Length: 192
Image 1 (cartoon, rainbow, N blue to C red):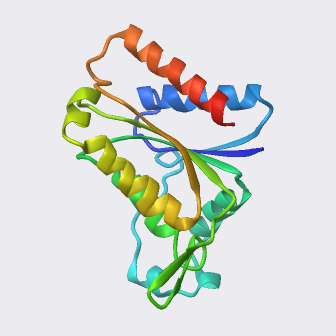
Image 2 (image 1 turned 60 degrees about the horizontal axis):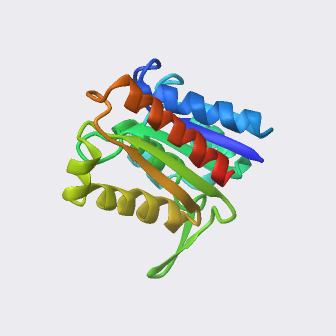
């Protein structure tokens, strides 16, 4: 199985990096072919310009075409990112804006849309500063999952297998962090 890990955090030693490392280790132990894209590490440009927006598919920027090759290669995509202000980092939003574009990730037919990335599956691991209890009581996890899982990935034809949220990462104990990483291992093991 081809497994693409898309990691989006500016700190390569963050807890999000530990999650991505765990995903990669479990996937490797299962014998999967893995590619990891560190969006900050590669200096991905998240800004969609007017020129790019209006360009035909064959004229897309080289960095976009390269990322699209990774997505096309993948059977499973895993996204690892922190939640900032109830959404993904601007870097990851820009990745979706530029890479998951029309005629690659979806096609428009009048007032309907067809996902073009069918046959792919996704896992999502998101960390929050607020506790999971605080997020759940406000409906934030549900809203964030609706936006990312349904509003982006499922519309593009990707089946979302699991979206796990890990709360209070800045304040929880090391024991809780270890339990979060154990949960990551269990989710990856169960779904891949």
